[in-house]
Image (cartoon, rainbow, N blue to C red; front, side, top):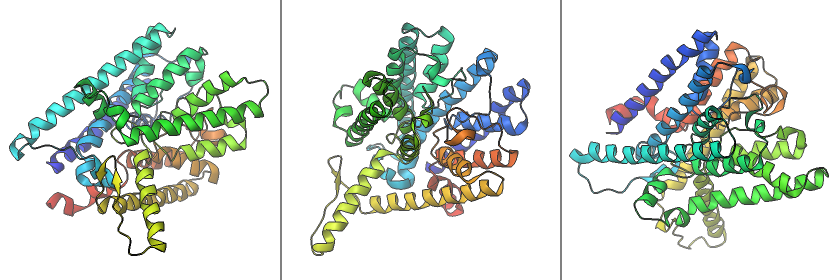
Length: 416
């Protein structure tokens, strides 16, 4: 069953990657740029090589949004139906509990996927309605709703979400980016009468609490640093941009690198956070930090009390001994992957800051990097073709959570 689902995923990526590039090539992009833009879309990364979006044909802009939207629902399916069974980076915590027999597994999987898809479509439609009601054009509302729920971040304007100056629209975007970063299976359970599932989940509480604290503290700092920015405006800016980076959406309502070096350091750190497991977000994910904290705290206590028996519990259940080890293995491979791709990009001719920033944003699927070249006010257009192909592989590796890609390449997996 695992091999069958994994095979479907790989076939899906290959098909979309091949046919998704055709409209871009017909528009006039080179093969390299077309594949880069397609992979960035289907992995919901949001990095782009395109400029002049405001004057671009609506068909191309809509196609970019559709790629991200399709990629988003595919990512949810992978996170819910495949990664937990591969035990990738502690994902076994989210293995669906079911009493179905082997012969009913396919039917059970289909029902889950249909419900997840229905929730995904419903939230996208709701996001569209809110954006349209708050002043977006019909076309902008459609494309930005797709990019928001998929946490992809492709916009129809060069100024990204900063094109829309209404604070209400930015707060609406913040709310729906948060929705995109929450496990969609919890939305399914909420529609089935488990209304408190969202509020009882430790991962969701940690995710929302982290966003609230970071946004508030950054807003206070921004107010003191820039006397011309009031607290209300600062909170709107920080809440939107912090949420955008943490959920790996990649929208930008302003060039936050102009806030100072402290803000640059903060947003680089936020790229490594990510949303919840089972969402469309990329990066490391909140639950891994929570598991790591529990493991480190238990380890410290064992240092001064070596005979103490520590039972790790997460989300009200006992945590298996293999979960912390899986998380540590994931983090080790994650960091090693970033190091390898950074060196590769440096050899491809990029300066160290651009190479590191581009690698991090590709592996974490955030979208915009840092610096004048690939930052929130730049694009990836100027990078050499070799660097773009390297980043295509990096985006795919990050979207498949690195370890899962290694599992796919191991022939013993296909013999299991």
